[in-house]
Length: 209
Image (tube, rainbow, N blue to C red; front, side, top):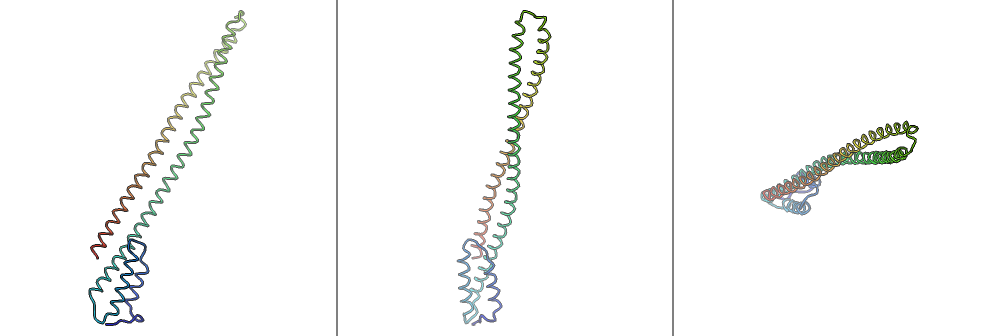
């Protein structure tokens, strides 16, 4: 039987379903085939259940493709948000690492200055000790000894502090590498899940076809 286009409710429903279908593998080919079947079915003088079932199958495939695209979009959006948080954390750790490097540089420069001063005091003490009038220089020698002890204690503290900074910086770099490894593993897992979703879509399409 012939069905007109002006007052056909089912035609309007099919047309709307076709318009909302998203991007996907074979969508354009499937829609073109569906349109041809629909025109053939509408112009058929007799009821054609086979063509009608094929059209319903095409519609089901299109709806599944739309659901798949929506799921993939939502999943990618969540993954992008997660990557953004990880990137911000990595940037923060890198900034902290740069600050620690600058602190270590300053502390190293201070340690070098202390060592230089100690060497100068050692040389001066040697000159004083060689002086024949020991009684006049004994007080100076004692003062120099005390200053040397203070400098040695300061140098030791700076060296210990520098070692602590180096350990903290190493731990920070290790944390950054671990975050990057997690990011890489999640990207690989995401790619594997995308392959599984595509395989499920192909199996569903073949079974419906």
